[in-house]
Amino acid sequence: MSESNKGDKKRSNKHNSTSRNGSKDINTRKYNSRNNKASSDNTSSNMTGSNIIISSKTSSNRASNNSTSINSTSINKASSNNTSSNKTFSKNIGSKKNNGNIGRININDNKSVCPYLRECGGCNILQQSYDIHLQEKQKTVEKLIAKYCKVEPIIGMEEPQYYRNKVHVVFDHDKKGNPISGVYEEGTHRVIPIERCLIHNKKADEIINTIRGMLKSFKIRTYDEDTGFGLLRHVLIRTGFRSGEIMVVLVLSSPILPSKNNFVKALRKEHPEITTIVINVNDKKTSMVLGEKEHVIFGKGYIEDSLCEKVFRISPKSFYQINPLQTEVLYKKAIELAGLTGKETVIDAYCGIGTIGLIASDHASKVIGVELNKDAVRDAKINAKRNETHNIEFYNNDASAFMTQMAGLNATADVVFMDPPRSGSTEQFMDALAMLKPTKVVYISCNPVTLERDMQYLAKKGYKANKAIPVDMFPWTEHIECVTLMCASSKAGKC
Image 1: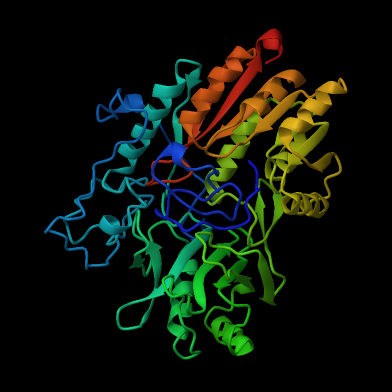
Image 2: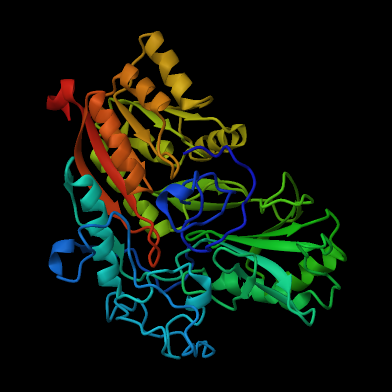
């Protein structure tokens, strides 16, 4: 999916998924309300690579057949029984002992697994067991996709917590002027103070809490949206799941950070594992989180992490999936569905920084990555060089126009990987794909609603769906990733 947007929109719902452009991080509760794709977290030592695979047929407690979206039990924010002041998290969440099943949660119980459940709204399915959560997602995909092809059982996480390797919080102040940090209450700009989050990387939350505690001593004021005064607007933490590298991005309203060197020294004294600190300047009155300008005040300005045995450079605005364990599951399934033999020419459309294309390069003769955002293409080329990959080329172009040009030159491709935004693909892209006539199309979707729409369109262009595999990339939210194989009807014997 394209990384065409550089800014980071403020969230109305913090957890659902990080956008595909890597910098725009607005989260919503409806599949069709976002134009950017879901992005990846965890350096927690207690997570494993194991997965839960659940079919909706294993339980009678399934989502309604009449629904095409997850309908979790509503959260009554006005309840007089709200006793969520007890901020003790359950120690049994996602443990190997119970395979991630935390049981049904009573949101009126002061021992609730998340003390912010009522106000935040991000993990909007926490009041269910993880098994039921997966079954409902399975039913959602089956309701939309099963009429086109077989839907395999959803692949869930064994330990579905602390998975986000990208954590963003907004800074504000309370009525007494004390700094607070957290997330916007759903649908508002009221900041809910958050100490720690069930799906955030633990170390990221610790660093954010340290920064908040340093503000008064360094006389740094939090930004006021109404008056436009104040300095610190947001903090973004990106962590390398395998590398352990950590990036801190301070989003300021001005490029000047008072006592910059002492601030860095004090922060790294508490958290020496931080490998780079970047100031991003957002001096506009805008809903975008990240601004255009940034400068490095410590380290190299980016982190690296490995995914499917490839190393990737991640900058503040780079797209990189927010759940590294499930990303490997998703991408490996995509490569498996493609059935590459080492002889194919592959196109990685919406390639971003080249993750899918570079992973596929070990199994193909030639890979072509196409991306509209020039910064992403630059990073992709760096990643190719870093991985000593020589059978891949990246082009800064619109994928639809590029494939149309290829078809006009009688060029061919055997497999096309497409990973569009939440809004799905476009008719122009799918028309261009049909002109190019690849044997196989591997469609990676973060929205089964637009996936179903695009499958219907591609069917008219001669492509038949073969298999769909849902993957739970974003536990406790209603978002679902799904990788689908589609084959050209004229070449059915080769698929």
